[in-house]
Image (cartoon, rainbow, N blue to C red; front, side):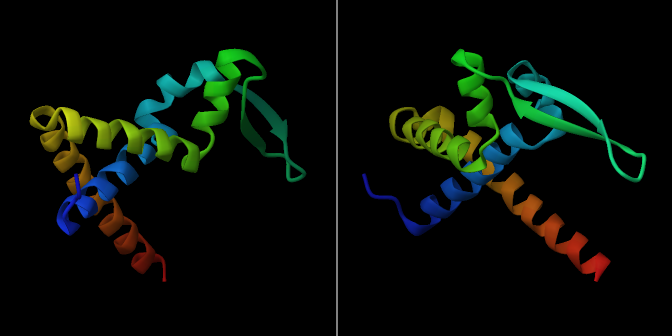
Length: 118
């Protein structure tokens, strides 16, 4: 099945947004927490810095490594969304559309914020 340009663009934006949601967003931190260790170190200026590193070994370590890599998570999100689009379009097209619109909004917000700081 070949995608039209609009379908490819929507899928790309949806993949971007869902990947960002999983890897970076505060709202999904509780999902990532079991796979990471947190350490606090005092910087030279006396301020504390929190460092998050993937757990070592086993399935927990593997998932931690996966979640710490935007590119790796993006591949699995791509497989999930494209597979869903292909096999279950009734359910996935609205989900992909929602994520694509959220992706556009996230990009526009980043542009607006960068213009404010310049």
